[in-house]
Structure formats: C-alpha cells, structure tokens
Length: 141
Length: 152
Image 1 (cartoon, helix red, strand yellow):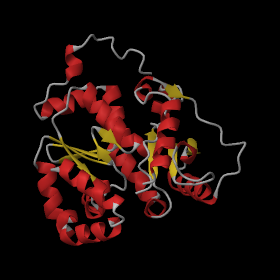
Image 2 (cartoon, rainbow over the protein chains, first blue to last red; image 1 turned 120 degrees about the vertical axis):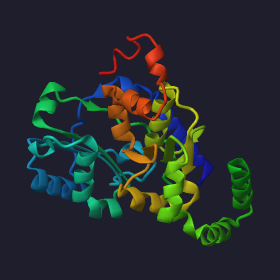
Image 3 (cartoon, chains in turn blue, yellow; image 1 turned 45 degrees about the horizontal axis):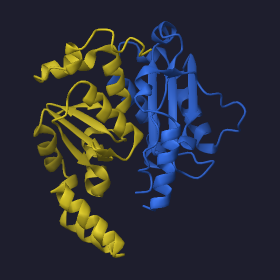
Image 4 (cartoon, chains in turn brown, red; image 1 turned 90 degrees about the vertical axis):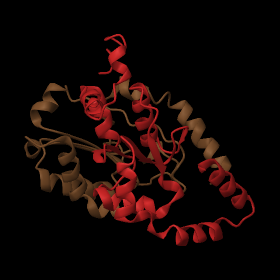
C-alpha cells in the first residue's frame, strides 16, 4: 500500500484518540438525518426493518472513519432492537443479522458492526451505542 | 518465519514484482483455505485469532480491538493468522465458521465471534469465564475490582 496513505491513516487514527477508549466510553448515535442516505444504507435499513420489525433501528455509515473515498458505503454499524432476539444467544443474533445482509456483505459492505438487543435490554442500557474502533489503515489490500 | 516472509514480501514489493509473487504464493498455498487445514489451525491452540495484520501491528481497528481485549486479560500467548497475507485463508475462514467478517476468535477450537462479541463478553464478564473453561486465568481477576468501573 502507498506509504503516504498509510501515514495519513495513522494521523487520522491518532487524532481520533486511543482505541482503548472504546471499552470505556459510549457515544450517542450519530445523527444521519442531515445527510441523504446512500443506496446501500437504504437497502440495509429496508431489509432489517422488514425482517426484524425492530422497535428501534439505527443504520450508521461509518465509512468516513476509514481510508476510503468520501461518500463510500463500505463500513456500517447497525443497531437492531427486536423481539426476535428474545432467548437467542449473542452469536445467534449476529448470525441472524449477517444472514439478512448476506448479499451486502458479499458485495459492497466491507465491515459490519452489530448491536442486537431485545427491547428490554435496549431500555436497560439507556440506548447507549458503543464507539467503533479507529481505522488502522488495512483497507487497501 | 513470518518475519522472513514479511521481509521477503517487502523486498519483492519494492522490486515491483509483488503481483507475480502473490500469484506464485496463492498457487502454492492453494489448500490453506481448505476446511481440513483450518480445522487443524483452530484446534492447535487454546486461543486462535484470525485477523488483519499481526498482534504487534494490527491493520484494522476491529482486529486491534481484539488484540487489546486479549491483552487486558493477560492473554499474550495465542496463535494468530494474518488473513491479509493469504487470500485463500481469508475466504476459507469465512466459509469455515459461516461468518462474513474478520477478526474471528476461537477458544479451544470453538468459534466465539468477532470484535463486537468479544467486546461484549469482555464488558459483561463472560470472557473471564470462557477463558477459565479453557484453562486460562484472566489477568483481570488479579486486578483491583474498580479498574474498569467507567466502562459504561
């Protein structure tokens, strides 16, 4: 990979702060209202809405945090709160979400961070969404 | 071994022969993505991680998070495989565990999850238990109980 790009990634990474803070802090969901969602984001939202009938759904395009061109739709975080996760282990929940988004994961989506909760868990957590780790520059491979 | 590989890879890259080298590599290592091969890898060690980069230099934030979490639990002695060095392994491990993303963590040959799951297990205490099951005492058990009081 181009050394210049990698260095730029590092700078951005450093700017965004220590990765360890991800275990210590939570960030409120970033608003996606001000920007028009891209086609991939819309598809993800649609598929998750249809399948899980979620009481809460966030689809966050985090591509800007990574070394990809502006406007990319490669890195996403989804927050899905649904009754369908009742009595399912976390790994099963993630498999359910991955399954619904299989096409996207085989295609344009490079990274998917998943938060899958039951309505009760979501309420208990106060609606907190943990922060995603900063990029480390390995996208160009 | 991996150091030699990296040095060689860097040298070849500078020589502009990278694509030829990778072609040769992928044909030689055609079976590294096979179920049998990966089955052997995941069962070789108590803790096995498939990641982007190496623990000393992770090339992805999610892989780095896994490394940092394991480090917090004092787990340093684990097998790690860099999927960026082997396209067959990169696809093979996804097929093996039916899991579309990297990193992937295995405990005693059993798939545990990726970054999100490991992080959640770390936060809710499950990771300490799971490590115990495979005979590893988490370093967090020996620390002050308030060390991650502000994790919320």
